[in-house]
Length: 341
Image 1 (cartoon, one colour):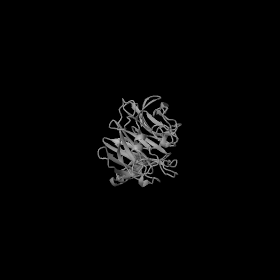
Image 2 (cartoon, rainbow, N blue to C red; image 1 turned 90 degrees about the vertical axis):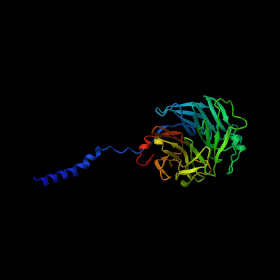
Image 3 (cartoon, rainbow, N blue to C red; image 1 turned 180 degrees about the vertical axis):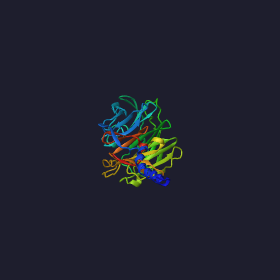
Image 4 (cartoon, helix red, strand yellow; image 1 turned 90 degrees about the horizontal axis):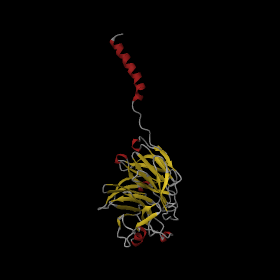
């Protein structure tokens, strides 16, 4: 066999063997998928990651805050006895922490909404003990917005710690409030000077919030019928509250959060076919989306069932569902393409 014949044989062997040796390369990561963590919650809405690393869920139908261990899926009652509303989207609607102290956002329990309670921010002092630190309903009635409304006390949606106090979105009165709280106060001040309007909007239905430094990020569900073009994430500042669009194109956005590598994600509830404002999207039409460089969204996982709130612990996303469930999506930043739930 001459030299040319040997080279030809080696070339043929290389061509044949190359495909066989290719699988030795690292396989791509599997696409993320949603897995059920817990079920059986009652009217689950807003959420927070507590200082202990657990998930805290606002259960509006039960008037309580539940603690969910993300590792064992154990559910325990953190606080109960909060005022409940007759609305299907009601109280408590969200929970947040400043340091080790938890606060609950209570809505639609005031007389103008058919209740006898106080809409506001409740500091959780014990398992069945609370202090109202901001009377949001009274302030909203005294300071009506320019947009149309039918519940004067409003319908706040999200509670976000910021600068030692809280930002509060009001999806009905279309604005964001800035609330200062004194953790030593024994009751909400009668003059409501701890509450002010930070920014007002047209009918865009502000929902979830996230903060990075001094910049505030907010999700917009958009007006009924919550078309994709109206589902947006916007940003604005504390001292210059003029909102700028970050991304748009997802149906009925209900939350926005920073995930792994400080990437911005949003939670879309999905296709709306309700009869009145406040009705949820159709089951299994929601999605977890990622803000992309083109000012749009990339779908990470779809076919989610009426999600309401989003949290991240490490590389795992957790979302709360109106079905009384908490789901987890692992390896979010290792995605290669979107995956159906």
